[in-house]
Length: 264
Image 1 (cartoon, helix red, strand yellow):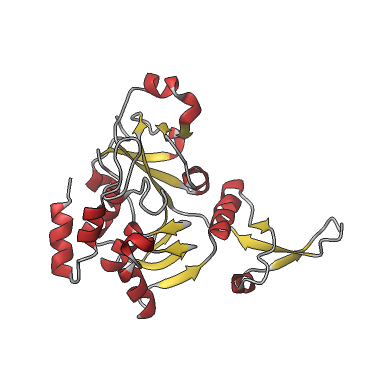
Image 2 (cartoon, helix red, strand yellow):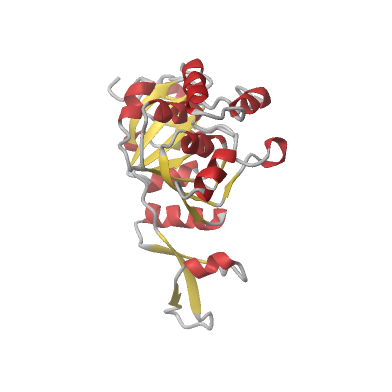
């Protein structure tokens, strides 16, 4: 039972200025409850990364928790519009946006997972993003010339939400794993929130879906609806009404009320 923590205890493991790889994608299987806990605890100077984000990164911007974001995309898309607090924070210079493509975020994590300083990638063509990365000469000399590379990024934490886990952090993911698996391998440690803690024997029954290895997990938090207001299929879908409610928040007072209301 040593890894089983409360949400508050798990949040306290994250130090100011830590780098977090946040699991899930857009509104799918995001660590929503843990994101709100970071805001409640008033973390500062965090550096966060993933391929495509909205609610989690936007809320951390609103709460003043982050000073750097590495991502390929941060927006609520057509249904809800832009991520207003992310956009405002970047425009006002309070958050540095390390713009990437989704491809280069994954390459940076993959390099860290493999323990190498950089990852060679296919050419980005005419994209202006290519200018931020360095090239190396192909050492095999088979006509490819210079090869574009992406430097490794080593997160202090991978923060992931899953459908079920045992008390040691061996975890099942149903459906798309997104980049959670490569985050788990790249990060120094893992904080895991789960819809349900189950016996190890139940994990073993679905061993082919056991995507997260318990030996790297520092804390396990059982929290039903932990992806809220996002989805965690097949348990529940995302809540449009709750996302719209969040997007009405305009000041710190309203944010404090929202965080208290949504404190499990």
